[in-house]
Image (cartoon, rainbow over all chains, first blue to last red; front, side, top):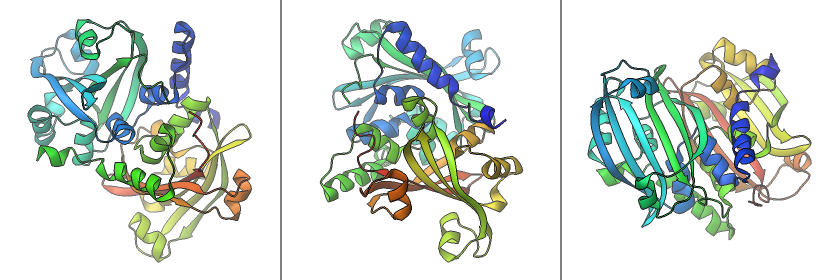
Amino acid sequence: MTLEKNEANKSLIEKTRELEKQYDIKLSNTQKILLTTDGSITAILDVLYGKITLTTLDQHFEDADEDHAKLVNVGEGEEINYREVIMHRNDRPLIYAISHIPLKRCSKDVCADLIRADIPIGRILKNYNIESRREIKNIFIEKPNDRLKELFNTNEDMLARDYVIINNNEILMWIKEMFPISYFTEI
Amino acid sequence: MTLEKNEANKSLIEKTRELEKQYDIKLSNTQKILLTTDGSITAILDVLYGKITLTTLDQHFEDADEDHAKLVNVGEGEEINYREVIMHRNDRPLIYAISHIPLKRCSKDVCADLIRADIPIGRILKNYNIESRREIKNIFIEKPNDRLKELFNTNEDMLARDYVIINNNEILMWIKEMFPISYFTEI
């Protein structure tokens, strides 16, 4: 019983180890933390780099297709806020992120901040005192698409994860974060 | 407005910088993250060291005196669960923590796990799907007391922080975490 209750993070440990084994790499502490934490990524980057900046690359509403509906557990055709951002320190890109947020679960205040301004989700949750929990779904490596190649100016593989933020027992947002495999290694 | 909304982590950045300046030290990335994250510390240690273990040093209920009552925002004399633990990897101590939890805000399940077993609070919150937010209060350095000297086998200064975990808009727990200043620097 106690043993079982202490296994809560087992899959995260295993996922990072499998990734290291599969690609014959050694993740730095900072990379491991960025890929597995259930805390705010913005807060971590803020404290490592001084306050970081977010630039919204795209932001719009769309009707969920089958795949997107599944990610946030809504019906097909329901409206979703789609946001694509890059977090950076001055001109240096740090982390690229995509979020999907079902409109019906998003309060007016949160929705307005998502749409109007370049505010990271971690800061939005903090500003409105939103209680939540995060469930990390996948940790993986993938090839960059053209967008990522251009943004980071590299052909390197990308470290990536996706997770959901849960509020009132429902998925408030699905988020995918990516950064080049050589980032956050120097420490 | 937008600027203001982006200042959510400003005080954390300032607190770590002040600490570095005041003591003429340079905190490592891992130290900075451990002192400021609003995510689970257990999850971070789990992924850095492989699954870590918690040993309960003391655990009892007591009536809150004036100071303790203030920390968790209850009336003087209300019952509080007091827990003192050490997180370690095999025989190596990593982080020492004290928690105060008002009995009246603690569900039966959570209370039972606090009392009966050596389960870190981050894992308890995760196991019961508890939605919460963390507010970091203070980040500081202090001299070790005899207990800490013995546990870590050192006279070194201790890096420390305290924070509250908020659930249903009320303080569910007040936590203080400490580790020797030479820990988590090697990365």
